[in-house]
Image 1 (spheres, rainbow, N blue to C red):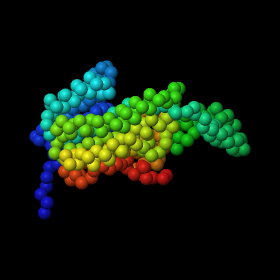
Image 2 (image 1 turned 120 degrees about the horizontal axis):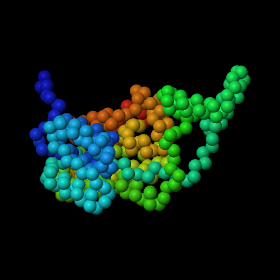
Image 3 (image 1 turned 90 degrees about the vertical axis):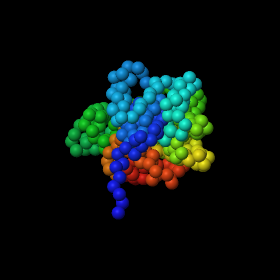
Image 4 (image 1 turned 180 degrees about the vertical axis):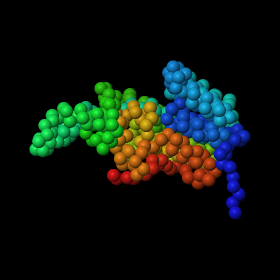
Length: 328
Protein backbone atom coordinates (compact mmCIF):
# COMPACT_ATOMS: atom_id res chain seq x y z
CA UNK A 1 0.00 0.00 0.00
CA UNK A 2 1.42 3.37 -1.08
CA UNK A 3 2.22 5.85 1.64
CA UNK A 4 0.21 9.06 1.48
CA UNK A 5 2.49 11.94 0.63
CA UNK A 6 1.64 15.61 0.95
CA UNK A 7 2.40 17.09 -2.47
CA UNK A 8 1.32 20.62 -1.62
CA UNK A 9 4.86 22.02 -1.40
CA UNK A 10 7.12 19.55 -3.15
CA UNK A 11 10.08 21.94 -3.42
CA UNK A 12 9.84 23.60 -0.02
CA UNK A 13 13.23 23.90 1.64
CA UNK A 14 15.27 22.71 -1.35
CA UNK A 15 16.44 26.15 -2.39
CA UNK A 16 15.29 25.71 -5.97
CA UNK A 17 14.20 28.59 -8.19
CA UNK A 18 11.90 29.22 -11.13
CA UNK A 19 13.13 31.88 -13.56
CA UNK A 20 10.23 33.25 -15.59
CA UNK A 21 10.62 35.78 -18.38
CA UNK A 22 7.30 37.50 -18.98
CA UNK A 23 6.05 36.73 -15.49
CA UNK A 24 3.93 39.79 -14.76
CA UNK A 25 0.74 38.63 -16.48
CA UNK A 26 -0.91 35.73 -18.25
CA UNK A 27 0.77 32.33 -18.28
CA UNK A 28 3.99 33.53 -16.66
CA UNK A 29 2.30 35.13 -13.65
CA UNK A 30 -0.07 32.21 -13.10
CA UNK A 31 2.87 29.82 -13.23
CA UNK A 32 4.85 31.94 -10.78
CA UNK A 33 1.95 31.81 -8.32
CA UNK A 34 1.50 28.06 -8.68
CA UNK A 35 5.17 27.23 -8.30
CA UNK A 36 5.45 29.52 -5.29
CA UNK A 37 2.79 27.36 -3.64
CA UNK A 38 4.95 24.35 -4.42
CA UNK A 39 7.90 25.97 -2.65
CA UNK A 40 9.98 27.25 -5.54
CA UNK A 41 11.58 30.66 -5.15
CA UNK A 42 10.66 32.94 -8.05
CA UNK A 43 12.69 35.33 -10.21
CA UNK A 44 10.69 37.29 -12.78
CA UNK A 45 11.87 39.41 -15.68
CA UNK A 46 9.21 41.62 -17.23
CA UNK A 47 8.65 44.95 -18.96
CA UNK A 48 5.71 47.08 -17.80
CA UNK A 49 4.90 50.72 -17.16
CA UNK A 50 5.65 51.76 -13.59
CA UNK A 51 2.04 52.81 -13.05
CA UNK A 52 0.85 49.36 -14.09
CA UNK A 53 3.33 47.73 -11.75
CA UNK A 54 2.08 49.75 -8.77
CA UNK A 55 -1.65 49.47 -9.41
CA UNK A 56 -2.06 46.09 -11.12
CA UNK A 57 0.99 43.86 -10.77
CA UNK A 58 2.28 44.60 -7.27
CA UNK A 59 -0.62 42.85 -5.48
CA UNK A 60 0.11 39.68 -7.44
CA UNK A 61 3.77 39.86 -6.49
CA UNK A 62 2.79 40.27 -2.85
CA UNK A 63 0.62 37.15 -3.13
CA UNK A 64 3.67 35.23 -4.32
CA UNK A 65 5.72 36.42 -1.35
CA UNK A 66 2.86 35.47 0.94
CA UNK A 67 3.44 31.85 -0.09
CA UNK A 68 6.62 31.97 1.98
CA UNK A 69 9.15 31.99 -0.86
CA UNK A 70 11.65 34.51 -2.14
CA UNK A 71 10.57 36.72 -5.04
CA UNK A 72 12.98 38.82 -7.09
CA UNK A 73 11.63 40.95 -9.95
CA UNK A 74 13.27 43.02 -12.66
CA UNK A 75 11.26 45.49 -14.74
CA UNK A 76 13.64 45.83 -17.67
CA UNK A 77 13.82 45.50 -21.44
CA UNK A 78 14.60 41.81 -21.82
CA UNK A 79 15.92 42.34 -25.34
CA UNK A 80 18.39 45.03 -24.37
CA UNK A 81 21.89 43.92 -23.41
CA UNK A 82 21.80 45.85 -20.13
CA UNK A 83 18.41 44.42 -19.19
CA UNK A 84 19.40 40.88 -20.07
CA UNK A 85 22.63 41.23 -18.18
CA UNK A 86 20.85 42.53 -15.10
CA UNK A 87 18.47 39.57 -15.01
CA UNK A 88 21.15 37.00 -15.67
CA UNK A 89 23.45 38.39 -12.99
CA UNK A 90 20.52 38.34 -10.59
CA UNK A 91 19.87 34.66 -11.34
CA UNK A 92 23.50 33.87 -10.59
CA UNK A 93 23.42 35.92 -7.39
CA UNK A 94 20.12 34.76 -5.93
CA UNK A 95 19.73 31.20 -7.21
CA UNK A 96 23.34 30.22 -7.71
CA UNK A 97 24.89 27.08 -9.13
CA UNK A 98 22.56 24.15 -9.78
CA UNK A 99 19.44 25.77 -8.34
CA UNK A 100 17.34 26.86 -11.34
CA UNK A 101 14.81 24.04 -11.61
CA UNK A 102 12.50 25.79 -14.07
CA UNK A 103 13.27 28.27 -16.80
CA UNK A 104 10.15 29.57 -18.54
CA UNK A 105 10.12 31.83 -21.58
CA UNK A 106 6.71 33.50 -21.79
CA UNK A 107 7.57 36.79 -23.47
CA UNK A 108 5.07 38.07 -26.06
CA UNK A 109 6.95 40.63 -28.12
CA UNK A 110 5.87 39.90 -31.67
CA UNK A 111 4.41 42.04 -34.43
CA UNK A 112 0.82 41.08 -35.30
CA UNK A 113 0.44 42.71 -38.71
CA UNK A 114 -0.89 41.68 -42.10
CA UNK A 115 1.80 40.80 -44.62
CA UNK A 116 -0.32 42.09 -47.54
CA UNK A 117 -3.35 44.31 -47.98
CA UNK A 118 -6.50 42.44 -46.97
CA UNK A 119 -8.68 41.59 -49.97
CA UNK A 120 -10.93 38.99 -48.39
CA UNK A 121 -14.39 39.03 -50.04
CA UNK A 122 -17.15 40.64 -48.00
CA UNK A 123 -18.71 37.36 -46.85
CA UNK A 124 -20.37 39.01 -43.85
CA UNK A 125 -22.03 41.63 -45.99
CA UNK A 126 -23.24 38.98 -48.42
CA UNK A 127 -24.73 36.95 -45.58
CA UNK A 128 -26.49 39.95 -44.03
CA UNK A 129 -27.96 40.99 -47.38
CA UNK A 130 -29.20 37.45 -47.98
CA UNK A 131 -30.76 37.45 -44.53
CA UNK A 132 -32.50 40.75 -45.30
CA UNK A 133 -34.04 39.20 -48.40
CA UNK A 134 -35.14 36.10 -46.46
CA UNK A 135 -36.73 38.27 -43.77
CA UNK A 136 -38.49 40.36 -46.39
CA UNK A 137 -40.04 37.18 -47.79
CA UNK A 138 -41.38 36.59 -44.27
CA UNK A 139 -42.84 40.08 -44.14
CA UNK A 140 -40.09 41.57 -41.98
CA UNK A 141 -38.27 44.64 -43.25
CA UNK A 142 -34.73 45.38 -42.02
CA UNK A 143 -31.68 46.82 -43.69
CA UNK A 144 -28.25 45.18 -43.74
CA UNK A 145 -27.00 48.02 -41.54
CA UNK A 146 -29.71 47.34 -38.95
CA UNK A 147 -28.94 43.63 -38.95
CA UNK A 148 -25.24 44.36 -38.60
CA UNK A 149 -25.87 46.60 -35.59
CA UNK A 150 -28.10 43.95 -34.01
CA UNK A 151 -25.52 41.21 -34.61
CA UNK A 152 -22.73 43.26 -33.05
CA UNK A 153 -24.86 44.13 -30.05
CA UNK A 154 -25.88 40.52 -29.51
CA UNK A 155 -22.31 39.30 -29.90
CA UNK A 156 -20.38 41.89 -27.90
CA UNK A 157 -22.97 42.74 -25.25
CA UNK A 158 -25.14 39.62 -24.96
CA UNK A 159 -22.48 36.92 -25.33
CA UNK A 160 -23.97 35.34 -28.46
CA UNK A 161 -20.81 33.46 -29.48
CA UNK A 162 -22.51 31.66 -32.38
CA UNK A 163 -22.69 35.01 -34.23
CA UNK A 164 -18.90 35.28 -34.42
CA UNK A 165 -18.87 34.71 -38.18
CA UNK A 166 -21.10 37.76 -38.73
CA UNK A 167 -19.89 40.10 -35.97
CA UNK A 168 -17.23 42.79 -36.41
CA UNK A 169 -14.09 42.47 -34.34
CA UNK A 170 -13.18 45.22 -31.89
CA UNK A 171 -9.51 44.29 -32.36
CA UNK A 172 -8.84 45.43 -35.93
CA UNK A 173 -5.79 44.83 -38.08
CA UNK A 174 -3.07 47.42 -37.75
CA UNK A 175 -2.81 49.90 -40.59
CA UNK A 176 0.89 49.21 -41.13
CA UNK A 177 1.86 46.05 -42.99
CA UNK A 178 4.48 43.65 -41.68
CA UNK A 179 7.98 45.00 -42.36
CA UNK A 180 11.23 43.10 -42.78
CA UNK A 181 12.35 44.44 -39.41
CA UNK A 182 9.10 43.32 -37.76
CA UNK A 183 9.62 39.80 -39.06
CA UNK A 184 13.28 39.62 -38.05
CA UNK A 185 12.68 40.95 -34.53
CA UNK A 186 9.68 38.71 -33.90
CA UNK A 187 11.43 35.53 -34.99
CA UNK A 188 14.49 36.46 -32.95
CA UNK A 189 12.65 37.44 -29.77
CA UNK A 190 9.97 34.74 -29.76
CA UNK A 191 11.82 32.01 -31.64
CA UNK A 192 15.51 31.89 -30.77
CA UNK A 193 15.66 33.71 -27.44
CA UNK A 194 14.48 30.64 -25.52
CA UNK A 195 17.49 28.68 -26.76
CA UNK A 196 19.94 31.48 -25.99
CA UNK A 197 18.78 31.80 -22.39
CA UNK A 198 18.62 28.05 -21.85
CA UNK A 199 22.09 27.52 -23.24
CA UNK A 200 23.59 30.30 -21.12
CA UNK A 201 21.97 29.00 -17.95
CA UNK A 202 23.44 25.57 -18.67
CA UNK A 203 26.85 26.96 -19.62
CA UNK A 204 27.12 28.82 -16.32
CA UNK A 205 26.05 25.76 -14.33
CA UNK A 206 22.90 27.41 -12.97
CA UNK A 207 20.43 24.68 -13.95
CA UNK A 208 19.44 22.02 -11.42
CA UNK A 209 20.46 18.39 -12.08
CA UNK A 210 17.05 17.68 -13.68
CA UNK A 211 15.95 21.15 -14.76
CA UNK A 212 12.87 21.85 -16.89
CA UNK A 213 12.97 24.41 -19.70
CA UNK A 214 9.59 25.57 -21.00
CA UNK A 215 8.41 27.95 -23.72
CA UNK A 216 4.93 28.84 -24.96
CA UNK A 217 3.44 28.26 -28.39
CA UNK A 218 -0.09 28.39 -29.82
CA UNK A 219 -2.29 26.74 -32.42
CA UNK A 220 -1.03 29.46 -34.75
CA UNK A 221 2.10 27.33 -35.13
CA UNK A 222 0.20 25.20 -37.68
CA UNK A 223 -2.97 27.14 -38.50
CA UNK A 224 -2.62 30.38 -40.45
CA UNK A 225 -4.30 33.33 -38.72
CA UNK A 226 -4.35 36.62 -40.63
CA UNK A 227 -1.98 39.09 -39.03
CA UNK A 228 -0.04 36.33 -37.25
CA UNK A 229 2.57 35.49 -39.90
CA UNK A 230 5.61 36.74 -37.98
CA UNK A 231 4.59 35.12 -34.70
CA UNK A 232 3.72 31.88 -36.46
CA UNK A 233 7.18 31.80 -38.02
CA UNK A 234 8.68 32.45 -34.59
CA UNK A 235 6.71 29.59 -33.03
CA UNK A 236 7.98 27.18 -35.67
CA UNK A 237 11.56 28.29 -34.94
CA UNK A 238 10.85 27.95 -31.23
CA UNK A 239 9.71 24.36 -31.60
CA UNK A 240 12.82 23.51 -33.60
CA UNK A 241 14.94 25.03 -30.83
CA UNK A 242 13.05 22.97 -28.24
CA UNK A 243 13.92 19.75 -30.06
CA UNK A 244 17.58 20.73 -30.40
CA UNK A 245 17.77 21.63 -26.71
CA UNK A 246 16.14 18.33 -25.74
CA UNK A 247 18.87 16.47 -27.59
CA UNK A 248 21.90 18.51 -26.64
CA UNK A 249 21.06 19.47 -23.05
CA UNK A 250 19.89 16.01 -21.98
CA UNK A 251 23.45 14.95 -21.02
CA UNK A 252 23.34 17.79 -18.48
CA UNK A 253 20.02 16.56 -17.05
CA UNK A 254 17.77 19.25 -18.57
CA UNK A 255 14.43 18.57 -20.27
CA UNK A 256 12.91 20.94 -22.83
CA UNK A 257 9.22 21.42 -23.58
CA UNK A 258 6.93 23.64 -25.60
CA UNK A 259 3.46 24.10 -24.12
CA UNK A 260 0.61 24.83 -26.53
CA UNK A 261 -2.23 26.49 -24.68
CA UNK A 262 -5.71 26.76 -26.06
CA UNK A 263 -7.20 30.18 -26.76
CA UNK A 264 -6.75 32.11 -23.50
CA UNK A 265 -7.98 35.54 -22.45
CA UNK A 266 -4.62 37.22 -21.73
CA UNK A 267 -3.16 40.66 -22.52
CA UNK A 268 -0.90 39.07 -25.13
CA UNK A 269 -3.80 37.22 -26.75
CA UNK A 270 -5.91 40.34 -26.93
CA UNK A 271 -3.21 42.00 -29.04
CA UNK A 272 -3.95 39.53 -31.86
CA UNK A 273 -6.30 40.93 -34.52
CA UNK A 274 -9.81 39.41 -34.39
CA UNK A 275 -9.05 37.77 -31.04
CA UNK A 276 -12.52 38.53 -29.70
CA UNK A 277 -13.96 36.50 -32.59
CA UNK A 278 -11.38 33.76 -32.02
CA UNK A 279 -12.38 33.48 -28.35
CA UNK A 280 -16.01 33.00 -29.31
CA UNK A 281 -15.13 30.32 -31.85
CA UNK A 282 -12.95 28.56 -29.27
CA UNK A 283 -15.73 28.45 -26.70
CA UNK A 284 -17.97 26.79 -29.28
CA UNK A 285 -15.31 24.38 -30.56
CA UNK A 286 -13.72 23.34 -27.29
CA UNK A 287 -15.14 20.04 -25.97
CA UNK A 288 -15.63 21.72 -22.58
CA UNK A 289 -17.06 24.92 -24.15
CA UNK A 290 -14.82 27.28 -22.25
CA UNK A 291 -11.54 29.05 -22.82
CA UNK A 292 -8.26 27.78 -21.45
CA UNK A 293 -7.17 29.76 -18.37
CA UNK A 294 -3.67 30.77 -17.31
CA UNK A 295 -4.22 28.60 -14.24
CA UNK A 296 -4.84 25.53 -16.44
CA UNK A 297 -1.43 26.10 -18.00
CA UNK A 298 0.25 26.85 -14.67
CA UNK A 299 -1.01 23.57 -13.22
CA UNK A 300 0.37 21.65 -16.21
CA UNK A 301 3.77 23.32 -15.87
CA UNK A 302 3.78 22.50 -12.16
CA UNK A 303 3.17 18.86 -13.01
CA UNK A 304 5.98 18.69 -15.55
CA UNK A 305 8.36 20.11 -12.94
CA UNK A 306 7.79 17.02 -10.77
CA UNK A 307 10.06 13.94 -10.87
CA UNK A 308 7.34 11.79 -12.43
CA UNK A 309 7.44 13.83 -15.63
CA UNK A 310 11.13 13.25 -16.23
CA UNK A 311 10.85 10.89 -19.21
CA UNK A 312 9.11 13.40 -21.45
CA UNK A 313 11.54 15.57 -23.42
CA UNK A 314 11.61 17.64 -26.59
CA UNK A 315 7.88 17.49 -27.05
CA UNK A 316 4.92 19.79 -27.58
CA UNK A 317 2.38 19.51 -24.76
CA UNK A 318 -1.16 20.67 -25.47
CA UNK A 319 -3.05 22.21 -22.58
CA UNK A 320 -6.36 23.04 -24.23
CA UNK A 321 -9.06 20.61 -23.12
CA UNK A 322 -8.99 18.98 -26.56
CA UNK A 323 -9.56 22.23 -28.48
CA UNK A 324 -6.91 21.56 -31.13
CA UNK A 325 -8.35 18.18 -32.08
CA UNK A 326 -12.00 19.22 -32.06
CA UNK A 327 -13.54 19.70 -35.47
CA UNK A 328 -16.78 21.30 -34.28
